[in-house]
Length: 372
Image (cartoon, rainbow, N blue to C red; front, side, top):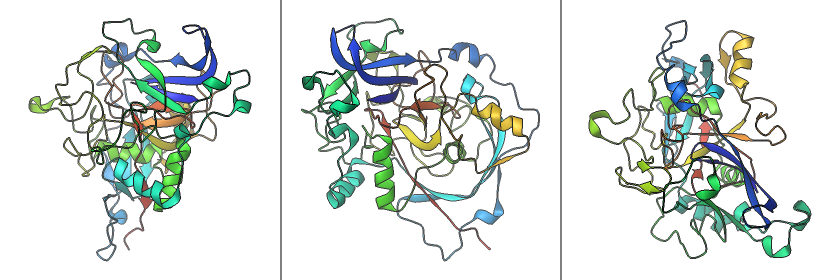
């Protein structure tokens, strides 16, 4: 069914022979960078120059330019992109992005419902897998659904994600935990179980587009230069939680110290320096870039400052060479330094375009004209 970034892991799911159930079922394969602890030892290694985030004075909207509803102007400029904590987010490199409008929050269930009502759109998770796409799969297994986080009731080793992820028949954006669940009362929650083509369809209807990876990271940093978090240097400044992440013992015991065991309503935590909410944690977010583990090294090899990068022309993940993936950004409510800390600014996720999960959503951007 596709690749999911599960708590910082990229998990490719496809219909195949499941050793655990001795039948055909969606089988994810694990591709995870577990080098977080070692990478953290490198934090503090600065790029060679001391340039800071520099915003462009030419990308300020004119007084007559109307602010699109629910969006924030991101002035654009030049910044350091990357992170010390993850091999695929190295090396640091200078990037320039033009100014753009960005949704203040992740797209909500309420907003997505309006789109579906207006267009009769059916998401990927709501469509039954086609027999021709999964030759040999029994018909009874070709059932619409998606992957849902299902925590075990006891501690488990972290080398087998099957112990906390399940393919749930009937799980989709309207039924986040399965057919007996509902989004009633969750209108202000981010819409989840969204595949890449679902996000593109909504974007076309809304007259917007997905952000590039560079645009997302520039906006995520909120004018801060090479800070580990979207809000600064400390994970809990003054003891305050700044994002919806996992507390307790992963994956079996979430102590909900931040107030949430799973997805939180949008804007439940303080905004960053640009007035954007949930740019770290809550749900992963789609970008338009293809994923390559070596993309940053390729950019640095070109020298100078990269202007408005659109991502590589193709996708390559050495852990799954034949599987095309898009970049996810921001981390989710499942991120924890025990297993994944990709709420760290500059962290990168990856996922196959045809797959969503219950911790993956999106927000959109719109280009803006430069001020004269």
